[in-house]
Image (cartoon, rainbow, N blue to C red; front, side):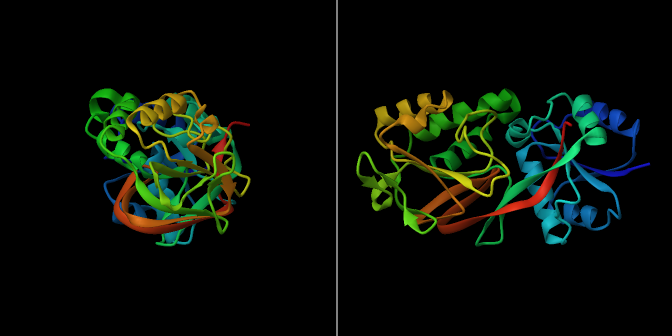
Length: 303
């Protein structure tokens, strides 16, 4: 019988007891299950390092998957030949949505037992971090920080509220953004993110959505070796509101103050600004470079 290590993040958004119980019941019907309820990076690393030949299954959202992938990577166990199972029970579950995983815990458990491994990309940064879905700099990070206050009460609806609050309190940062060594430029409008233009947000995505379904990179693919990059210069009050509306409809790429491009390496520099990588907030970052590693790991998906 197949052995599974089911990782439950006790601090995750909606990893409630009923959902965990439903998933475990379904998994135990077809596998030998060990549960690791971890509360921090050290406990998680210890759990995956001592898993033996058990397959890792993550119960949680993007933040929980991010933490598990980082732990596997740090113990040298991240590989396409060892697919990770995901039971999407976080607040956002954006990577799971991109991969077509069912939101029902029992149905997701069935995918773990009967699915096939799909190789997916990983974004690595120059500070030793990883990104499994999306990282955003500027207002997106502020929105995530604001949303934390409302997650317990509102669930995924906390993200649009956080974005509204963040958008009303910032006017952008003069950031330089380069994609594959070239400054991000809006060819038609003639503006460039070269450090002379205030930028509201920079996003680097392999997944399509953030914040529980907002289509930030609707054309992104998780397995093509490229990141979709969104640079927004909508810094005025009216422009910020219009950008937010367009984003929810997936039409923001049509705006004159938004650049959407693709590349393997993305970097930014400028004054210290916050960034959010799969829900993990990092404050006061003055520069960062991300590189896409194609097919660095794999996820069990429906056949």
